[in-house]
Length: 107
Image 1 (cartoon, rainbow, N blue to C red):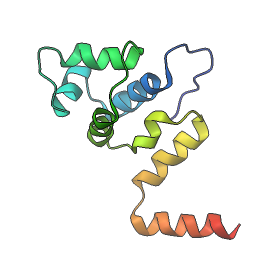
Image 2: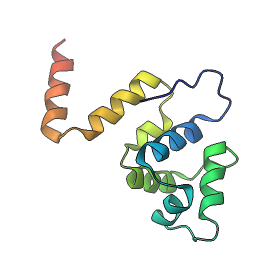
Image 3: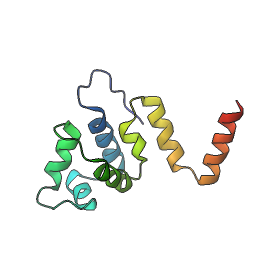
Image 4: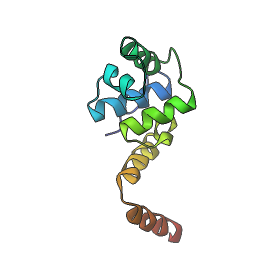
């Protein structure tokens, strides 16, 4: 479930990253290793991304999204409802996404 970001001062990317990582049940250090970071610094680097100390380059953000099995757009989405829709649509089959799009276009 998408949590509301109201009152949270953590930058958007960091909030979405933490949420996706926790939903996936992946610790910071393991996520870092999955995206190719050195094991000795992986947890600290992911923590810095989550707290907004640093924002990863887009190439790294793509690796993070792939490792967490979320669309890249989710990590940058500033609307909680739209972020939830992105996650649901991402988990659908291509056929189901096409059907959803057709339904949305006809309404």
